[in-house]
Amino acid sequence: MQLIVNGQTHDVDVESDTPLLWVLRDTLGLIGTKFGCGAAQCGACTVHVDGAPIRSCIVPIEAVAGREITTIEGLAQDGVLHKVQRAWIEHDVPQCGYCQSGMIMAVAALLAEKPRPSDSDIDAAITNICRCGTYQRIRAAIHATAASLMAGRSP
Image 1 (cartoon, rainbow, N blue to C red):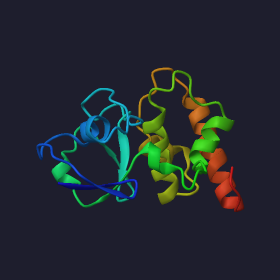
Image 2 (tube, rainbow, N blue to C red; image 1 turned 60 degrees about the vertical axis):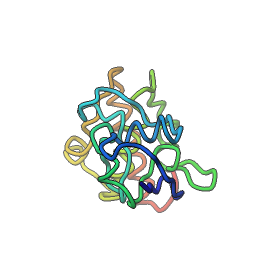
Image 3 (tube, rainbow, N blue to C red; image 1 turned 180 degrees about the vertical axis):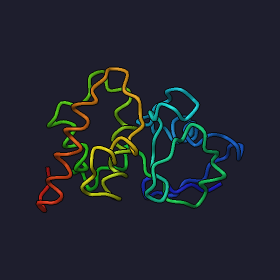
C-alpha cells in the first residue's frame, strides 16, 4: 500500500486494517504522533489527512492510501516552525507535552479553516484532552496566532 506522508511517498507492507498511528510510528519511525487512549477520544494521535484533522489511532491505512497525510514532523516547512508551533513556544503552552503534537495539529487545522475563531469555535473544534490542564495557555496561543494572521504577520 502507498502512503503519502509529509510530502513523501512510502510503500508499506502491513495489513490494510492496521491503524494509521501504528504505521506512522512503527513502520515509518515518525514518533511525534502519540498514542493516548486508542479510542479517538483524547486527540494525542491527531494528524491531518488532506488538511483535515483525524484521530489516527482508529483510522485503518486502507482509508488513507494515496491521500496527503501530514504529521507534526511535517508541519514545519523548510526549517521554519509553523505559526502554531511558534505560538506554543511563545505562550509556554506545554507542561508535560505529551498531548501537544495532537493539540497543535488540531489547532493548525482549525486556523486553516477559521483564521479568527471565536471561543465557541475553539470549544467545538479542539476536543483534545490535556491532562496537565494548560487550556488557558492553549486558548491564548490560538487567539495570538489568529490575531497575527489577521494582522498579516507571523506570530
